[in-house]
Length: 106
Length: 126
Image (tube, rainbow over the protein chains, first blue to last red):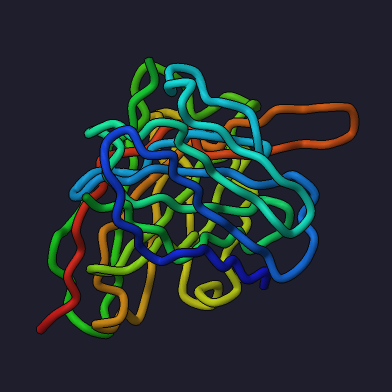
């Protein structure tokens, strides 16, 4: 299985901050990398697919970058509704695997 | 727009079979454009992909669960289902169904889960 390692596991930030979350994979996955946001008690929501494509309806302050084994999710200016847990996921090969999550807190 | 809704028992006894159904509304499970996934999340933990099924009935399961999992699709009811047998407390989780959408670029197929159900909590306990 491809291992997904997110860092940090949690971070504290303030409204307006620029936030970056890293996702590293145990082997190259080209750009088969997706990012999801999950709020407590809710289902995950797709933010970014194919490493850098913004899902329709997702604010442009979210962006994704990277390829092969190193990927980054960036929130350019953190908003109150962005406090949540973020997961990366690879769909390069089966089984599909998720990172352990990064919790963004106040 | 497409919506997914999980349903099934919230409590399952150890060693018995967990059975869940996902009903698709606003779209068709028979579409050849999508795969249909099950994902679970134990309390306070991360996401685990269980597997997916295609409208034709072809499946792909996580090897960690493969020996206990069976998925099926009922196109007449616009539903797909999950069965997980011989459950233990470790199978206690929120179970989600989700649709796989694909973007095709040249020979490359990129999949991502763009529509999710709200999730249903399943507790394994006697």
